[in-house]
Image 1: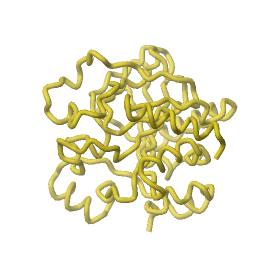
Image 2: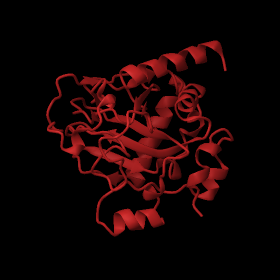
Image 3: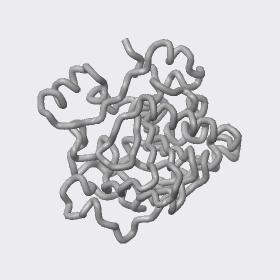
Image 4: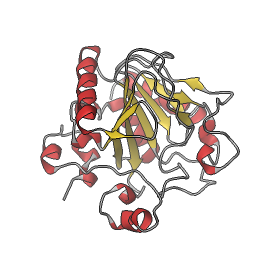
Length: 271
């Protein structure tokens, strides 16, 4: 690991601790990000799943359908942050495409799984003041005020609950201290999954293309996300309470992944 990489990791960890987020630049090279952006858009067009927000396209379990971005998932700066937070045995829990088309609606302020109190699999509030999941939002196209850069509330990761937990915060209202997380294509927004955030209104004439990749410690139980698992049957199917579902990685897709990326998905290979 180079001295520059170590310095960036230290800086990212400091910002994650104090503000809950950090923007890491140049993760995907400028001459590659355009092609990956187009590839992800085509994948969502073919395999996308709708969301309950008008103007949004998505695909959970994206890696099972598209591997164009796979070589960058093991960026040493991101993995260095993950290891510092979780120890050496971290893994990827989600790869999800998020596309905000022109005219999309603003989304609700929330915290990501497992802190979203509306999910079947969640840590009950008040939850501990500790990082237990790391969200990375990959900017495959420019994230600007006009294209709908993600809304975030700096410092909200230290709150023991979030707007999904009935704390008297209107999730659709503008929060006084919210900002937009802007960045160039190829950058990655890292944030503590407890951080309050929301989809922003895209007032431009171009799609804002992003990808959420979440990194988890080995001890965080992901089984509720796995189709057909005992935990999902017990917690989702039998209760009727919603939760995310992440498509398993087919064996042939796993075999084709870069060697330094395979350890991040060993737990999610389709049997």
